[in-house]
Image 1 (tube, one colour):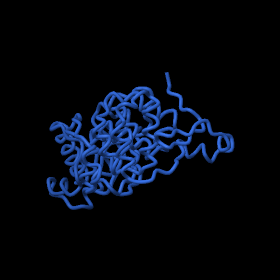
Image 2 (tube, one colour):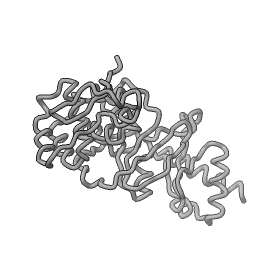
Image 3 (cartoon, helix red, strand yellow):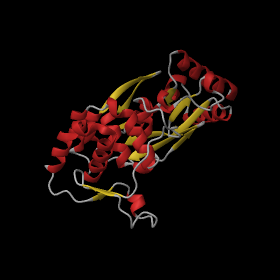
Length: 275
């Protein structure tokens, strides 16, 4: 009987793959198979031990297609939207992963980065690591999130404009100042600067100042006039460090190379883009 139940779940997952699906909810499977929860969990555990199934969140399962057996899981693009709907959580794929999707090619994206409305622990799925960054004001940046087709449907991704702001906002996840500068160089041609202005109105002023300075340095100054005006409309603009980490580094903290008057940014080291 146990073997029959396990075989039933195996057949169920194979049928899902034949339909182009790689995820399912435990309750859905229990109902479809007509078994109790204990029997389902036993069967699911056996398939997990055989590396045919993953269970990254409670009652959420990922079927591993044959072509991804050696990797331990399909790419996160195959299941991230379903996972976040299962969690009841608004989200978007962001930071370096979004930059890669928009054409940035000069950095290795070591993790699949997701911005979410709830704090979530990271997921290890085979060789992939999905890391979540918290944003409480998701509704304010909704205009900067777009749908992108995937192999199994679609997923939410930050636009080039929102991506540019986010790699400054979550700078630790973006690989440091030089990498941020390189990514901005790569995605700047894709940025809608009107959208960037609108998004900058709901983004922390120091983030906008730093982004403005870096885009200015990359030669996009003439396209930033409206963003600069929007920044001025928010009131008195205090000085901010281009790189807060370097401001606390004794090797840089006493040396100021530039005080940019347009963006009121203090520069202790000029960023360098990768060739």
